[in-house]
Every structure is written in C-alpha cells, then in structure tokens.
Length: 134
Image (cartoon, rainbow, N blue to C red; front, top):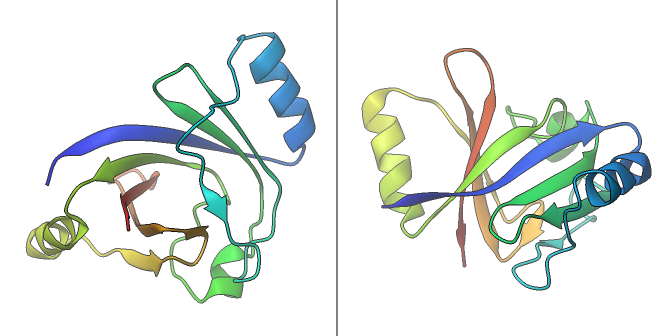
C-alpha cells in the first residue's frame, strides 16, 4: 500500500490565467502521459488545466463550492484544492483509514474515469486525495 505524490490541485476562478502563469512563469509543461480522463457528466463540469515538472502534476481546477452537493459526497476537493497521492492498493489504504478512525468520502470514478478516488481531511482541514488507477 505504497503512496507516492501524484499531483497538487489548486482551485481557481480563472483556469486560463493560472495555466498561463504556471506555464510561462514557472515554465512547467503540459504532461504527455498519465492525464486524467475527466468525466464532466457526474456533477463536476469545471475546466481543468494540467501542468507538470516532469514528475509531479499540478491540476488547475475551476473552483466549484457546490461540487460536493452535486455529487452527493461529503468532501469537496475543488472548493479549496487538495494534495493527491497514488496508491497500488486502495482497499488496504481505506482499511487503514478506518482502523485509524479517519472518515473518508469515496468518490469512486465520479470525477476521473479510470481512477478510484477517496478524499479526507488532515487535522487542519486540508483535503487529501488518495487514488488508484483501475
């Protein structure tokens, strides 16, 4: 059940402005592989731009404070953004969270086709995603 940092999600009102900033000022590139296949039919239909340093992606997502309500999930990962880790055994990680008394919201494949995602809060209320590629 190894975790590796996969992406940081920043929520914004202006995806295009953020995309230009991260590409022109930070000189990040658009990744050529491992791009999420967003499913905009299940509640979150916001724009998303993706840049990368070659290892870690940054997802620049249109802020949607209603996404949790629209999808029926407790944790809203696009209200303030989140940090995301990829695992090779999501079932074991969910069992670990349950054993530790950490509640999580299981989004399944709601937002990204082919990624099973869960979201939960750290002690200060920051949103953390852990996902497994199906």
